[in-house]
Structures are given as structure tokens and as C-alpha cells.
Image (tube, rainbow, N blue to C red; front, side, top):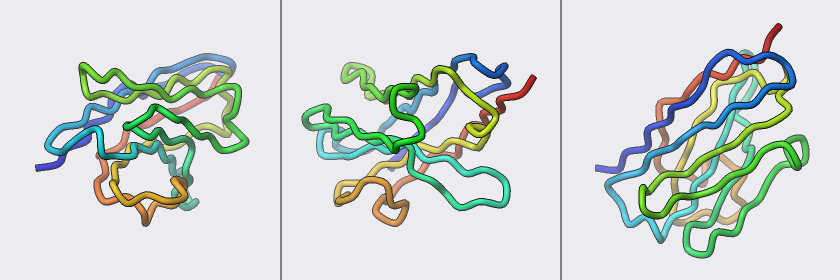
Length: 124
């Protein structure tokens, strides 16, 4: 059974940092693309970053470039999203997703498996 389990969300002050984790199991990790998405109240699910497990290439949407870093620990089958210089607009529930037929990387429909999400709230 494919499982993706997120952790690491919480409440943080503007300008602060968080690191989210996505622990993956139940599939051939090397064949996958892992993406991070977020969904704020009343808004659609937005792709934030993704990583190609096979070669470690990473991709980001413009609003998070230079602030967010996606990385992988192959020994732990875990993908991380380090988020720096957070602002209130980053407040959302964050999800990791996995798929092996991903093309664009930022479209939710391309991913087959999803975690339960972890809440990130940026507020003073």
C-alpha cells in the first residue's frame, strides 16, 4: 500500500522558518516524482515544488523561489520542504503527493497518491 505521511507543520511568526517532511513507503521510490502542494481556505490546490527522485532535479513556482528548498533523504525515503522567510500568504494546508507519470509537475491531477496534509499558519 502506497503511503505518504506529512509532518512538521505549525504556527510560525512572519519571517520564520519551518521544515516539512514527507515519509514515503509502499512503492518503488526511485521511479517517482514527489511534489508539495498547498491549499488555502477558499482556494484551489497550488503546486509549490517538486523533485524527481531518480536524479534529484528540483523545480519551484516563482512565489517560493529563493525561500523554499525541496530535498530528499534516500536512506529514509523522505522528502523535505524547507520554508524560510515565511509570510501570511504562505498560510495553507500543505500536502505531499507522489506519481510516476508526472509531466508538468505542478498539476495535482498528475499525481496518484496523496498524504493527509499538515497545516502551516504564519501569523503574528
